[in-house]
Length: 308
Image 1 (cartoon, helix red, strand yellow):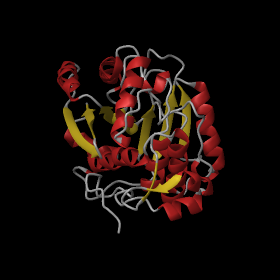
Image 2 (image 1 turned 30 degrees about the horizontal axis):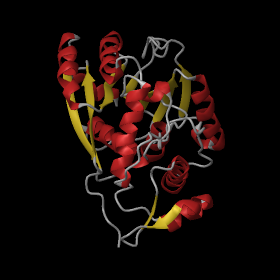
Image 3 (image 1 turned 90 degrees about the vertical axis):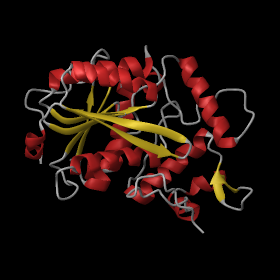
Image 4 (image 1 turned 60 degrees about the vertical axis):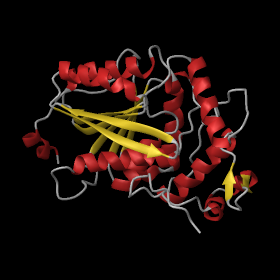
């Protein structure tokens, strides 16, 4: 019997419980981490980084035909179902005022902070055929992302990578006068320090295991630019909003994940200040985690259809 995760987006391929037999057939090494829980169901220990990484590798291969996916141990290993949700909600956002969800390489997405894992471009392209540009301030992360593309040469025409040479900027150095993107997306560094990131992960691990673990362990990996920055998400997204107004004609929909609901008031105030035309908050839930997508545009409703 499979349990449906009804909180996930209706098009999310991961709504049913994991079929570990199929996943192990994709990545045999995963079998060493799979066991039966108290309910007799196959699962893994989500507090073990290697187990999470192998699960991701198998999910990407089974559902998205991504071959040879791998990341260094120190890099962020994102939960695939949640990342897929973000992509599907963007598809719904783009489909507003259209007959159907726009697909194909005419839809161009910009992933801010794509990381070594490059998960958003992979899922977006394999699901909807969109063309994606992944950017990052970390050269080593982009080198690993390129290795993934090298393993999947058929995707390299539609997924490109670009280094952001200056961490003070998000869109500057990336966007040029002729560039047009249908959307941007971002999973920002949520925490304001390494200590806060470790404490947050300890809470998450305890929730996953209902355990008494006292030592923080980054079970989903991650390093500074991926997990924390000065001022945390409040500072990062505020900077993104302010900078977006200078590139208002280059991107139809700017979007970003927001972890802390209490920050929305500040962001909405800033968006009024920079004269955005339309702002949306899209609620998402994955298991015990609630988050939201903040989306804004400077393009009038009449002109939005011209982007497709």
